[in-house]
Image (cartoon, rainbow, N blue to C red; front, side, top):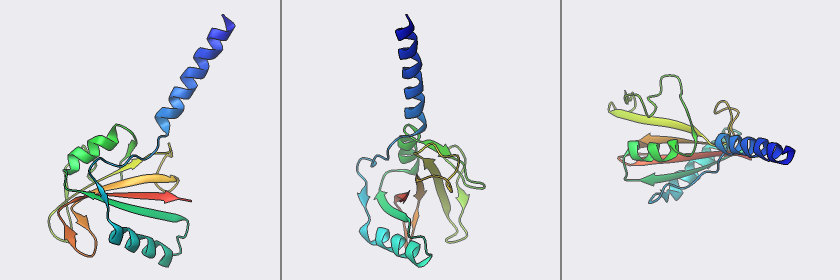
Length: 142
């Protein structure tokens, strides 16, 4: 009886651990944007953020579809003034159109600053040019 109790407690503990931390999974059909990834990593180096590694994926799929995928495997983090997946898009000062963005934390951290693995989903992608694709920006701290 005691062994069953310990096994149950262990199982519950492990399930909570898996719920609060997960691994990043690439959204099916997205592709690494090598040029944007290189630019992001060079900008991080220039800002003396050598412990940060970025990888940028893009997909033609809608923001809502991509956000729904990640909502199932990571914790959504609501940035102040960010639209999030449940809100409305906001007007962008950069190009005057609608900007959708959402943030997801994979390691159970309480916010992006303390997270070692988080993503930003954004549509449209704003880099050197504005592209009508959904971008998945993966940020990893070493």
